[in-house]
Image (cartoon, rainbow, N blue to C red; front, side):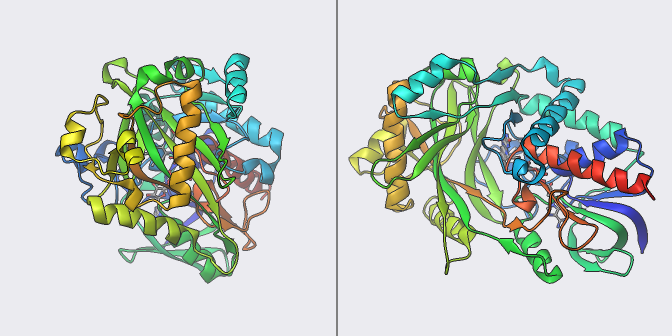
Length: 461
Ligand SMILES: Cc1cc2nc3c(=O)[nH]c(=O)nc-3n(C[C@H](O)[C@H](O)[C@H](O)COP(=O)(O)OP(=O)(O)OC[C@H]3O[C@@H](n4cnc5c(N)ncnc54)[C@H](O)[C@@H]3O)c2cc1C
């Protein structure tokens, strides 16, 4: 069995920034990072290389797994805010959370991120316009790296840590056991590693695994939230006045009928709609590039409705998965429908899509989202489309495309303290895998936070 001082499981945003910070502050511990996905340069989704519109359901999804985690092939939007993207502030304090996110931004800038503009919602005119139309614009600064620049920066961070931190790819940690001096890890290949301090940063794709592992170690978890919605795609000109000013606008609306909050999420000006495979369930997402040569003519964003469940229902993710499975069953993956067809109560078919002025950037199956989405969430989303139409006329056009379903699975929230340490001493759970964060900035910030705590421990030995 190979022995280490610290093992980091998961090389997503949280794991990458934990390893970066430990390297930068020249921590002397023997550190190993284990990642179930591929190294950066080998992360190619077969949908891209084979030009197929269908997710092939690879056992380890290149979009979700591998160096950089789910964020690598993402849009690379780093939102610096406590208003959304997670609850890190509730654990470390408001100021500390902001300071950590600003630091992450500084690091990214040091690796070339400063070429990307930092947008801010300080524009009062947009806030006022939103308020006048019953919409609320959340405060944030956002640096949009773009998928291409994001990948370059991650490659440079990997160069920086390699040689100082050992990283093993295609290594899936199957079990964690407590030992007298720390922890013993066993991988799916049967390899064993031991360590004194263990950092679990397994993200959304590791959600089931983390719940199981916490259960085995007697650590409490709570799963009560899932966000269900659709991805909207429309000509970029419709949202240009908003995306030029703030890039990503988080607009919140309270639907009149049910009182549910609906919000815009993950806005991608001139971007592409993509699929995402989480544990075999195909859902929709979006991203965009920094390089104008790769721009499309469309903007896409999600409209999400949060669902929180109370006793006796405990498995909110299963609720989200069941709805996504319906869309997978009817469409073999993601469904697409024209807004006009949805309102007229008819499915979109190949013929109607051919006549559609908005050209889809994802090859999805034309269908009827009303057969998939529960009425409540669908009504909420339709109301929101009309609300957005008031500040961005054209949103409610017949040819606005809706892709479904988009599901934001929230990891069970793991019981951790302000150091993100569980009640098992030496075991830290961070990033999206802990349920504490749901974004690149906050996941990365949680990695820096834990790295500094581990460093202080080693310095005091
Ligand atoms: C398409 C897409 C676009 C997105 N766009 C944005 C965006 O623009 N801005 C934003 O803020 N957020 C975005 N997100 C969300 C963002 O990617 C996540 O919030 C962030 O990656 C979380 O970081 P993490 O390190 O906690 O987890 P992850 O990035 O999910 O990394 C976890 C890593 O752990 C590995 N792992 C899991 N289980 C095991 C195991 N048992 N053994 C070994 N390794 C394991 C996984 O392979 C993965 O690489 C996007 C997500 C997707 C999928």
